[in-house]
Amino acid sequence: MVTVREKVRFVETDMMGVVHHANYFRWFEMGRVEFLRQAGILLLDLMADGIVFPITEVNCQYRASARFDDYILIETIPKVLSKAKMEFTYRVIRERDGILLAEGYTQNVFTDTNGKIVRLSGRYYELLQAAQNKTESL
Image 1 (cartoon, rainbow, N blue to C red):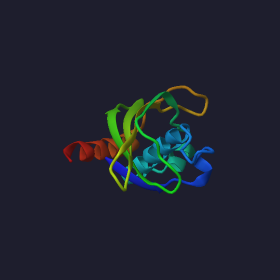
Image 2 (spheres, rainbow, N blue to C red):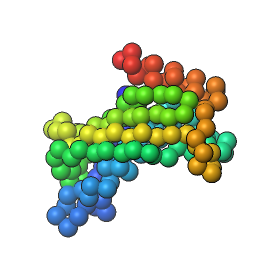
Image 3 (spheres, helix red, strand yellow):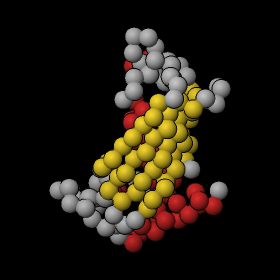
């Protein structure tokens, strides 16, 4: 599991000071990018090699509201890994009281710049396998 700590910004809220629902998807992305980074893969390196990582499925279940100035923890857990796709689950938790704010899921595929699904090379796949194995052993 990878955890990212973030502070809710005013721009992420509506007129009631509650986080707009679309921001959770942005936070999920922050978790995915950090997972890749901790696995030793920079998204820009993937892109330089002609590989992109689009979402093909996304889900979010909202449990409670985050508000301006809350600190949140974005937990990202890789669930499925193949050479063609990855699936992640997410939990967004308010840090001060441990309240679960949202749970989510994404499925991402590896494609070329034309949108054709590709299989990861051994180098990238081995780094992701090692990171997922490390997560599963915790």
